[in-house]
Length: 145
Image (cartoon, rainbow, N blue to C red; front, side):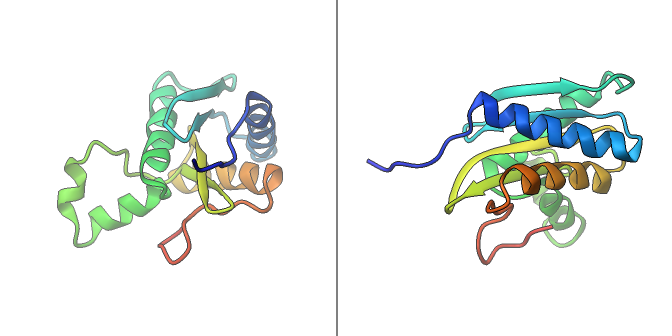
């Protein structure tokens, strides 16, 4: 049996609070999602003013990061370059989905949607780095942000 860390609802609440703080500091209105390592929702937070479609986009970015243990922006870059077939994989290939890796184990992912993709990613990274300063957001020796 392998024992590994797992995200809790309290962890998700802390991530949401840190993400909302960064979004508010920047004057951005976004939707923030936190998923477990199986891509299931732990928490979703819609800031006032976020557009209706941002829910699905936030969840899609987080799911891409959770299911592949890679930032969703990596898939965007791969598709833009020499891996066009990856566009058929059912992933949301836009920055803003970030895996959360603790002690080498994927424990979940965050997804943010509402502003430019790079700004969505900024919010997620800020939250993860604030709540879990020891966390990685890409596996060792793999492409990251």
